[in-house]
Length: 257
Ligand SMILES: [Zn+2]
Image: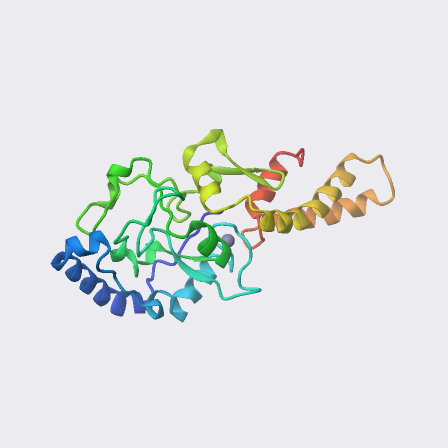
């Protein structure tokens, strides 16, 4: 995960239709609180608003076409999902819990709550998970202040994920075993085999080159290898590159893992 800076200009559709629909959701909730809390009544959400082309385009640009969780490039192979940081239709504190309703319905069309995600991170891992440090602080409706919540999920637009999660080789770990980093790695499936394979594919050639260029005795090829290495090191640390956080950690650690 890396920091994400979204454009300050909120996509028009969220400002217009999104606001109107949100007002209606809040009104409905106030009229039938008990039914929404018990799950008897469920909110319907308009994916053509939060997942509209203008929202998606803005997120693709802000996230360099990569998933906000696993940093894999999405736009090469799919359109990606517009994912809600705080789940809109119901939440779970742990994977074993039943989904509790009504969820963060009032944030379904909220620009700050939307990110682009790959389908695996979103549909197989994060899903409705949104653990808090203290469950009793949860904002269970729009009437309750969100600021009391301390989510055990790194928010890449308000926090720097690289303060919480680093890498040893291709493997992510929580710095100083911080609980937010640990929960994020676990709940977003950031160690899953499919990403590890993809990471390794990019990581190994660069590691080999790094070791050759720095470790081998003087050869006629050393100068050329150094040149290639410098170019590749620069490229892999840029925010446009897949797994740039991993490469920044590796370079800092001199590829010792
Ligand atoms: Zn992902």
